[in-house]
Amino acid sequence: MEILYDYISWNKQGDEEGMNYAVKRFIHLIPIIFGITFLSFLLMYLAGSDAVTEMYTNRGVEVAQEIIDEKKAALGLNLPFFQQYVNWLWGMLHGNMGVSYVTGEDVLTAFMKKLPATLLLTGLSISATVLISLPCGILAAVRHDKASDLLLRFGSFLGNAMPNFFVGMLLMEFLGIQLGILPVISSGIDIKSAIMPTLTLAIAMSAKYLRQVRSTILEELNKDYVLGAKARGISYQVILWKNVMKASMLTIMTLLALSIGSLLGGTAIIESIFMWDGVGKLAVDAINMRDYPIIQAYVMWMAIIYVFVNLVADLLYHHLDPRIRLGVNAK
Amino acid sequence: MTVFRENRLFAFYTGLVVLIVLLALFAPFLAPQDPMASDMKSVLQTPSAQHILGTDKLGRDILSRILCGTQISLFMALCLVALIAVVGTLVGVLAGYFGGWLETILMRFADMMLAFPGIVLAIAIAGILGGSVINTILALLVVSWAKYARLVRSLVIRLRNQDFILAAKIQGARTRSILWRHVLPNVLPMVVITGAMDIGTMMMEIAGLSFLGFGAQPPTPEWGLMLNEGRQYIQTAPWLMIYPGLAIFIVVAIFNLWGDSLRDVLDPRQE
Image 1 (cartoon, chains in turn orange, brown):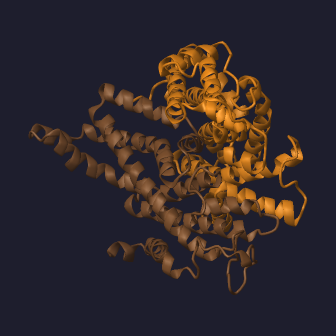
Image 2 (cartoon, rainbow over the protein chains, first blue to last red):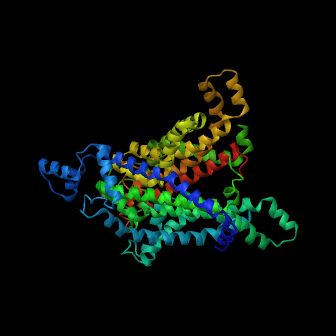
Image 3 (cartoon, rainbow over the protein chains, first blue to last red):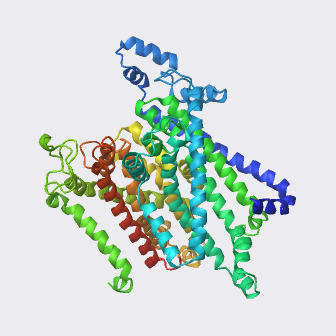
């Protein structure tokens, strides 16, 4: 982090221009939010105009056609498509995202209830990933082509070829059933239940990041200035930690920002396997039940995360790399 | 053939890939039992001489199901990668070569598609369309073409103003022939490399969708689906999930190795 502040204070004079840039980027990203919500709305419109029938089927009651028609009219489902979308958008802008077809609960409330679990899992697995992949990646890069590098690369290769749900089930089998030290299915949102989903996600992500950290640092180590510094008798440790790490951090931070985004979406598969009650599981359940308002809220959430994370990554890049900020490499 | 002689490793991995393809093609003949035939007298049996990898809840032979599953997984993954490559290249070439409003529209659209972590949107699409092999391919196609479009577009933009293209233009070559004869051949190697490296990933995503119940439907012997069926018996019959999982792992690993070595052969600049 110190490295970051270093750069930031050094770049203070670029702040004003930076603000303009941020605003510009943000405006650029707004159409994406609307595009995504429109597309998902269209998709649901095309797939199941019969959400009401679905709703009663989900509740396990059989009702007359008149009641279905009445309910449809009440929900505004017999309006033309475009009007439905505008109505939804209007409600959304006023914080009203409708009610769940299944539970009748307010969508926003239902969504907010599930969010803490996903936030917790995101925080834990990102921390675990950083703790595993950063030291391992640095080690692999420094010990290039030595035994430890080969071993780490092999490990990362194994992790990359294994679907994360299989990793999760193997953990369940060995830690949960054979050794019996962890609950197989989460008993609630607590640390003990969080260990296995966190491990599963961290294993899969670390396998990916280890490679990226390694190649980023290797690339940096092969640059001329490192050779120059060595020739001037600067110790390898100083070069590595002061120069190479500083330069590599930019790429690594950006990659991390992007993966935080995908984790915040709730990793649907992992949450479902471990019965972790987050937004990813909510979305999968909603898709299974054709609970369109919930799906739509979820899509909205994903769009917002995407835009936000991209903005942050972009600004980080813009702010930390003087070449980009000053437009040296423009074009 | 010299390619193989000069790149032993690539030859070896190609051999493994060919082996998988042959396994897939001849799976129905190699499988010791009918993968669909249930046998209620031998339900959930542990691996034994008769059923090397055990049987599932309907008494079906796991080994036979895994072998036949190779066919489905491979077929789906290859179809998917081919479709993605075609769609992505088409969009990328159009956007990159013509530029202007066409590029803006196509690339904004691609940005939107990239906005989601692929698997979530694919789940939504497959879930809403209903689970089936075709819908899985469609869903993942919708999610994945944008990456290729981006890649191809950036390659085409670099090509667009190079001398040989300008020369062709000055000679009065038609746009279509420039695209076919000059642009496409220069873009193709990168597309092939990316596609080859993606086969493994796509297999995992296909398996993931089936695992959630949004892909192939029972009784299809699809690996992801088999893992899902095994999930319910994880306490009593762990072999139900371990062997299909290993099958995915081995095949994905081989395709990843092959893809990486193909890149090294075709594009020696990288590492």
